[in-house]
Length: 173
Image (spheres, one colour):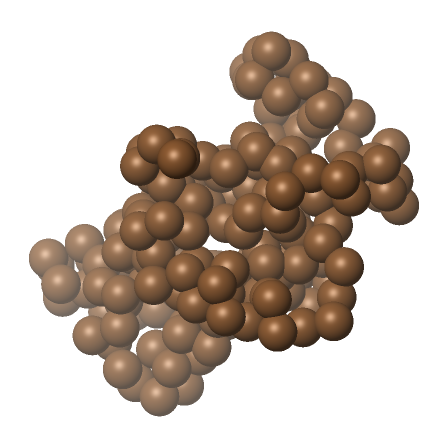
């Protein structure tokens, strides 16, 4: 049994992209639908996923238990630490948006932060381009993140197209 506050490693990129698509839908509800109350849901989702992957996230649970298994897509396993970092960036932006909106009434600031999340989540869901993962790789290259955090991450670009991870158990973010 998995511990409650652990993050999966490896992560099924198919599920990660589907979670990102859910984030895009939620951010569009906020930005285009004017449903600023959903900023709280957005922040909760990111905090839940950074703490425990899909375990405490309703979106993560739906994607990993219902949506991904129903699709004909093969799992594509990728290292977990960069995905957790990306969730942490989302958590930082969404919590800042919640504080700005609910704490200070600075809805404009909150919506700019939500729009930033929309861009990053769209890149992940549509193009499989994880902006947080690229940031993580850059931080590793300059020594801010030690190599021991993610041995597989030393060269994020060399893994593209690699299929030797197919035997690992798929887990989503």
